[in-house]
Length: 303
Image (cartoon, rainbow, N blue to C red; front, side, top):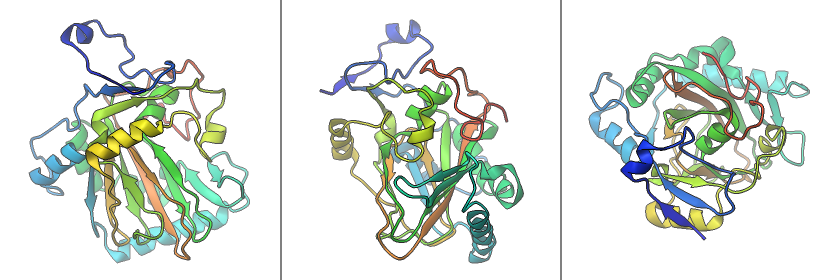
């Protein structure tokens, strides 16, 4: 059963530090989001317009087709292929394998050095992120998601914030992801799907967080995922869209928007760089799960 729950002014005044309890109840809750989506509505950059900012606020995402040139993409794609080759036999914890195989699924913390460090600090991306979050930002997490042709597995529906809140201690919804397509994302090769408007509701999940959950969840998440009834409700409200476009396109999406992707059974790979930005005014606290924090390569605890 889904319980729709708002927050009265009295509850707001007396609220506990945990605004988004999850994995602590025996039933699913849908909580109305009290946090803003856009923290600065006064346009202070030239990369997106007021209408695009309003679209992000309403839908929880903004897709910018061909944001970067093919020449820029070629440089980053070469770096992506180099990292893939260098890590094929790596036992580093930053390298995550596909469930059921040794194929690389993700490489984390790619922003720490080299070309992807420059990309994370790109002078065209940062002004948009700072506009939306209304402050200086830092990289909470970065990764390459490799969805190889034929073998790239799905990412089930989830809200990133649910995990970042419970397992990392991110207190409020003041973060977003920027996904940069390094290959064409089309309708066939497992593009990211989002549920527009779902960012305004927080799905409080059931099931206590196991110890060292990240060791299995990065391959296939089983805790902190929404129940089917909640997904049906959200999808009936907002529908499902899959923004697609050429390599060099970017997708900005709110930390709480519900998203996922299908397996890639085509011959054509779909590799994206994900950079997660958090406001410097929203620093991580002890995880709300009561467990030890996840490693720094997954959730940076300092900028």
